[in-house]
Image (tube, rainbow, N blue to C red; front, side):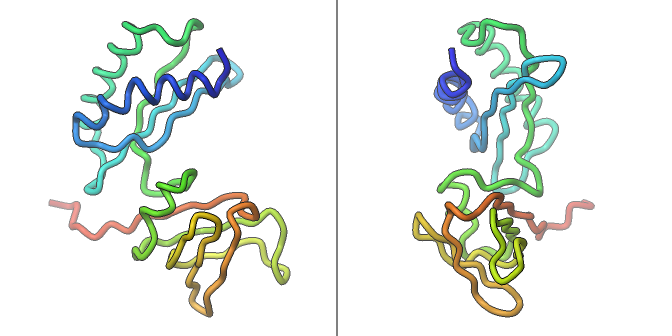
Length: 161
């Protein structure tokens, strides 16, 4: 089975479980590092993911993956929060940050006016291009020109309580 097929099957299998707990399935990846195969599953929710949230979902997902046995080779399951700084990999990810106060970082494949890195707020997205409002002006970038698009979440709640 190919990497893409594994990711698709795992996504279809675990998304209902993640949703049942009230979370969003953010990202699934299957990769090999020098020592092992790894299955990465990232989850999210508007108020953030706690260690308890991860443990709850991990237990159920691990049980389900063992039962269905999609991946034949041995692997390490890594279930995690999408994090405070996250890559925006899909249209759904990008749309979630349009009009928010979160800082967006753009890295281009090729420089524009000598610059490859930009930061600002994501003000628009039409499916093909993003509009980034920087401190100086607005920039429009085609998705095909973007090497990396990341969001840095801003915590608005007092987490010291």
